[in-house]
Image (cartoon, rainbow, N blue to C red; front, side, top):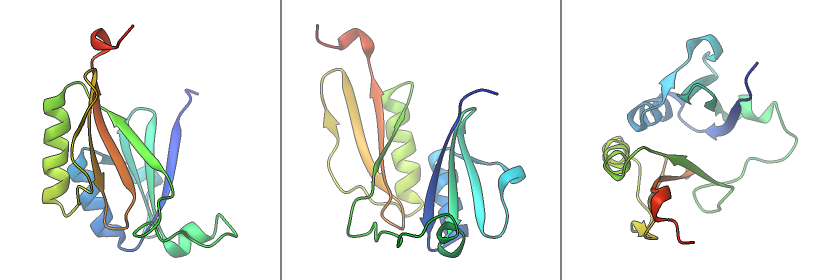
Length: 134
């Protein structure tokens, strides 16, 4: 089996969150989805599990962080072009996400940030390997 990553996120509105992540370009995998969780695939090996608070709580003894006012992690997704970054951001903003900061341009990498309804923070970026300083 290939190595994969599953990022589990506690969400307050499962359907609304599924719609948002679909707008970003994730696809639902119904094989691993039910009424308390939705498996959203970014690509062949990267998945985000959107879980109701009740379902999420069944995996941990710690309280769920309030990611609207506290950062719990920064999740980053690479793209094939800066145009794709902008397209993903436009779709996410139209689906109700917020852009908490301005675009960052590091010369070799351009990055924009979007937050979902629960405050989970995603960095969408394009990196041009030929422009990385030596």
